[in-house]
Image (cartoon, rainbow over all chains, first blue to last red; front, side):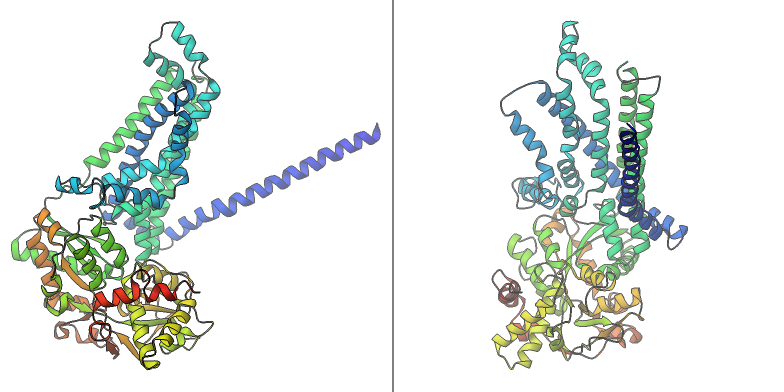
Length: 285
Length: 342
């Protein structure tokens, strides 16, 4: 009895010790691989003072890059929101031939290197690509212009929303929808009042991931951008240019802005979650 | 649920607002614009030159001209123009890259190189060595690059113009040193590339590898790039070594006829290229460490910075760029033969 008691207390203290170790390890890992680089970015960005930082961020080419990044991200997120909802809805709630093929295809952008993602658009829309000559003859610019950047970004961020929603919708099954149907709800009613509320957190998470990747994408966008200053440079490309021009403080200033946007995204997610979980609005009630 | 719908609407309106801002605030280009697709180390020069040209064009015609720039490895940039990048003018590292555009697409008219003076090269440069202060590895000439334990930094000749000049300069030295024995020259080049730890795609990438990341003992560099690196990153850290022989590097410029015709920008583009040969263009070239073809227009103090080097030319030594490209850098050429055997 006594023996077993002491064993138990040893086990508990051992557990506590192990937990502390794990916690320390986790925090050290986070500090080393997340916080330190982040702090380094901000330290380097501010190394020449606030005035240099402000000038770097307010410089016309930087402003153009920020604007382009926001535009491309807004379009990519909107496209993938619609596509992700439609694809996951059809995959999770219905069975049809070619379903597993669709699921596999949704994952394709994850498995393909971003450089290839860019090159396929060069092959399609380049001057000697499949559609290139026709587009050129009609004065439509796709590649080395904003539409190409949007296409490449949509491609690389395509799986985020769908990947987040498919397992969620599959787990929820179609019970709620069937009940709504028997109560006389129309298709849109079911979607907006039953399906969407059920998946809103997953959807939000998918959108945020999609957003973060769209803002930060480098490889695919680099291939199709053409790197024209003030016109087709997104923020990550602008950072590279500044770095290559020995303009290190400015490069890190724009990089820190990119990091800030990412942090803002996370903050937004936390706020929305907190609100949703608050007393006023439990999900779906 | 109501909360969700409201949140959803609010989210949507935020997104719409962001998109609207981004589109609505895009600058309206009432002015005449040009796109100059250039290679890596010309950034600082064209920044200054474009401002000077805009002022000149304004004075001449009353029109506001704005020149957009794109920079990257010369071969990569040529590839982009071939794939449809809308350049009105190209200002690349060597004639062959413009030949490639002319051959593959016809966007640049055949015979482009005869349209402007000096083989369409308004400024020249050469290849020198950038070493760490005090030259700790004692690198004096091309032969030292092949020694074991010397790390050599150069970009990839497949994508970079500067790297191709590097290879040809090294070859010119080796041909003389081994009195024309090609097998020995190949062995030498193989030994040099065995000492190369990383091939960046462009000259600027290699410079940052060498100066910022601190990799390597010697950087094979455009003369202008070497001067610039020293100016930007401190004379206390690096010095230039001038080899016994180097190559006359002629970065060439051309109008991209097809694109200029589509944009209606031919007159502006031609004036832009002609201005490179003007006294002001030549002065700015020398200021940014390019050797001007008309040195009389340059500031003598700028000219005094250029060391005396014995220079060979691609024309007399290699029979022109087409022949050199074919022999050294085409698939299966000398570079492919020596590079994989590390």
